[in-house]
Image (cartoon, rainbow, N blue to C red; front, top):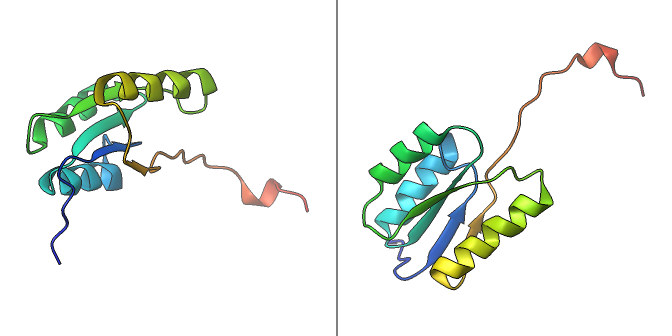
Length: 104
């Protein structure tokens, strides 16, 4: 089965590396317009953007832990594309902690 996403707008959070990057590339290959979201790594986000097939893609920086930045992110996408058809909530944070210090 071939994935067809022609004329779809996809926001992929955490798209500057790993699973987000691979998803962005797969969706772009299927015809979607990709919004590459990133928080800190502008260089990696540009590299992903440059690797995508087609020319309808963009990238947006936002700290998703800040509700105001999330609102601005969505507003910017709606202003440019008119809608969001697909949302891939891929962004995440890994924080190491000492399991032995947890109390139950």
